[in-house]
Length: 157
Image 1 (spheres, rainbow, N blue to C red):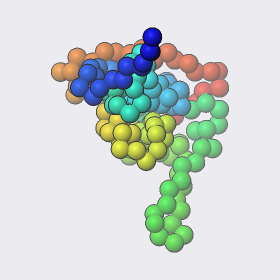
Image 2: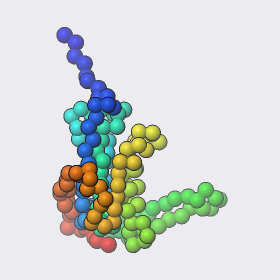
Image 3: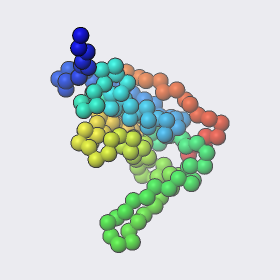
Image 4: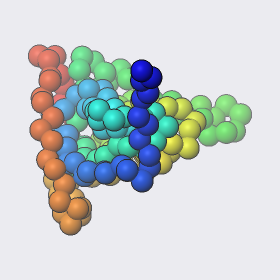
């Protein structure tokens, strides 16, 4: 008797909408949870080459936390493309700046497969908001209670 593995077809995928409240959540733990939901690895019929993940809506993204001294010591680097154009900014400055949701967005993006069209498509299914409301009520999103797995050395913004 021959055993085969059933592969999920793109037409067979049923995507759900989920809402996650990021208030007092640790950035790395929350980002890994979101990346798993975006990829679809929580499903029993997960197929690596098919976009079978859910749509994820994150609210209160500016109220995330870091453990230890990462809030002041973690440095994000980028390069402008010009000679000597390396720039840096701490996590504290980004969370206090104009776009604090980029902390969570970049953390999730860096947990997805690199340089892949599938990962770029999966990132479009992520919506991040700094307020406690979102405009996706028409999709009837399911609220996921993300367990507050903070340790005793968590620092807030």
